[in-house]
Length: 638
Image (cartoon, one colour):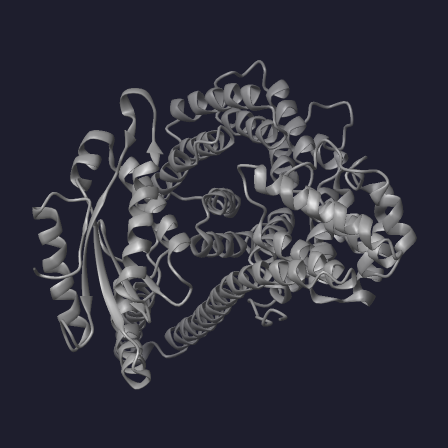
């Protein structure tokens, strides 16, 4: 299913390559006398301009500004110069030199009481935590910076760096909604930057994120705009990122002609990109050639194999898919199946899972090759897993599309309100100059404008409250991924009615993990969360697809099970108990094992006529199970 096409705010001046201003020349930096000393302030202006176009060069300009002010160690702008050096090195992977330069920048900013500069140093600290893999700490620091920056005057580039870095951290943490909102905040900040670099970078990041969430139409639009801007500005690193985003989009959307045009554009600019950047992405280059129908071109990239910089899970999976697709096109179906099965087995043995989109596409190819080889059982197995991933991706795509549309609407409305307010102010100023005798009437109009502004703020507050309400109505528990209590309450009515019409039995099982408070107290809430997540995974594995599994609250879970006799249900719950007792958490003195639960069962029209009545009976029986020793299931009162 193609992702729904969404819209985002329209182009600004910097979105048109013809309107991108040129960066200062070397002559501008040194002045008319070429032998004169470079102007450090102009060097730093150029460094900020190049920050997201050529970060290495931006760092060199920051160092040049330090060299030019070597005899003025207390000069205020040296903090800015150190910061550019630090940021360039961090973006280039030189972590320790980046940390050292950041500390020098912080000392300079502190000496001049530069709160804006100190915030940016903290921002680089957050990036350092991210690089170290301390993602939650990084996010907490990002949020503290955001809270402390409300009364600090900041540049558009500062805002872009903060929003963009926070979004990247949220992306790794899997906070997809907040990630997109932060990336769109970054895009809004980038539009106010003089340099096109942040705008290009924002578009490539958003394009990549929408690609990951399978919102391919939106990803295509963003990435195509990024590609045009990057080519016009000579931002070749961003150009390459946009190319690879588009290769995935065109392949996923089956846009053969566009993919052919993209390959031609790559060939036209290949000499301008960093050496080896294409060779380090052999799988996506092969996929692009396959999408364009160029089998020979695909073979050329596949023969290069996986490079050392592209052996992550999605790289391996995409490479296996491209290789198998090529072999199938050549009629070598057995070889294709062997490659696919090897990759599937390798992924199963690895700790990290493939990204859902890459995994789904691999399984689709595996389905096709099994059908060609007349192996319907294997084809069906792969197809079922692919369909499950497809349903997951459709949900993510729909949510991402909704956020994109929401942001576009809010941005357009804010821009129209701003324009209307600006026009009103201009008219009021003209009236004030021309109609001095009507000053009292003008004051009344200004007060009315204030009332309108307050009404607008109230509407915004109401819209924000509505947004919070909509989020609260989400049907999934964020910790376990199971359905939540609201979903169960709404769904149970229909399920009970259906069971009555079809004369099938239906039961409620209320489960409570034993001694859960002790687990939290002795091992910490993080371990408690891990126990809840693992127990939820066991429930998903043990219960049938037709059963409804819900986290009812805290350590309580509710199962809605239909068409299942007592003996079968008892066997299922007994197996669940054994598996739960077999789980081990932690090690050594922190070892936690032999976890158990107590459960109560209530049967429709035997123990109650509606959902609430069944839950009350099941709850009483669960407490009876606890009272009689825990680690057991109570089916009846006797």
